[in-house]
Image (cartoon, rainbow, N blue to C red):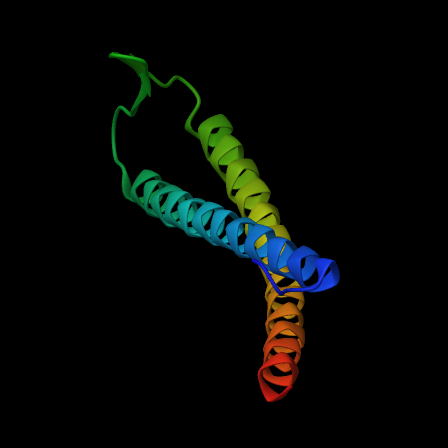
Length: 116
């Protein structure tokens, strides 16, 4: 990075770090959304289920004695996942704005340096 001011070097480093953070937040959000969809399908199937219901505990299937309790647990998990997804969406939006701003600043600085 010879010939680049220390300030621009710092902005480029921030830009790269923000890019990594944005990628991580996006990946987490996608994973949470996937988990939420899976949990929603589980809840729908549980509502349709007639007779015995089993839940996975490691490599075991355990008979559920109280389906209403299980429904409550699933609803609580869905709510938690929904909150996490919204939080990650906000984080993603904030990082995207910072990323775009840094990109614009760097492009201007590089453009000005090239014009000199």
